[in-house]
Image (tube, rainbow, N blue to C red; front, side):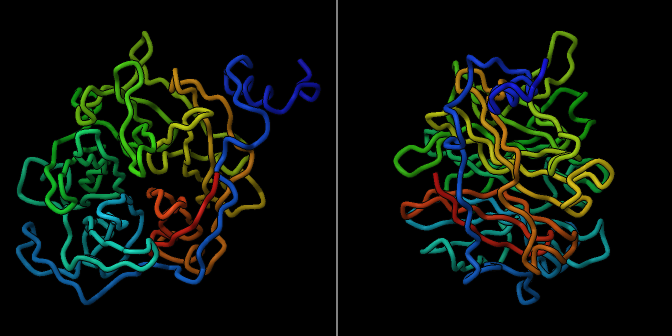
Length: 364
């Protein structure tokens, strides 16, 4: 087959295993574009030596956000934007223990932080999974009954495990436990859960498809899971009990080393829009990017069958280019985990070089 003779969108579908009859509208109208980094405000959050917290594990006060702050989730509540962000101390542990802090803003650009974290390793049922690495990389959505659902990474210093917590007010969180309870997943590596949602009256609400909630997850390929309640999840497997991959890295491109979900997956008229984070391979990746650089891409999945990818952008739409994105704990990183619709515009919140937090505006 001569791919050069086919329309571009058909080539994308064939390479992804999709049928042309499932094609979205031609062109790039399904994507978020353009993207503008709000330089007047960035970075909007930086490490802070002044805040202390009495760690129940260490039994001492620690500067809990002294080393780095990054990878925030975002949600709108009471006409404010709230960020739930990852913060690391600077103690000699597993490269710093991570806790999740809370901040709010009236304009979505300038934030006031709570003095202490709202999620952290404690002497509770998650202790063995969270100590000493901590609670990492939150993503947040709202269920239609008003319950906030946070997916986050519980890290014991060796293995990352996808976990779930719930809240009614964003301050008091209940650790529900690991997202996957089957032994093969408890003992394995899992992270980065992005739940399928829709925009309803300005709120991002978890949305069922055929009676189930759906979630994209993983940090190599993208996998999927389903749930009845957004709390307990079952990974999607094939008949041989292998995980079903719905997106893979692409050799020679910006997403050649790994792909990983960004914020929630958004249901639109065209399909399910997935903003995803990706790493560039140093050996067979995009030669215009540094090896291992993290950039941001977009893909579209079928609303009736979330496992079916309809289209995928050939180019990333956010790359490390600012000094605070290029240099930090991990160089050359833009990593999106937060997105809100606020005051009539879409705002993306992202970690920069695993060290700071920035904001960008996108349009559809």
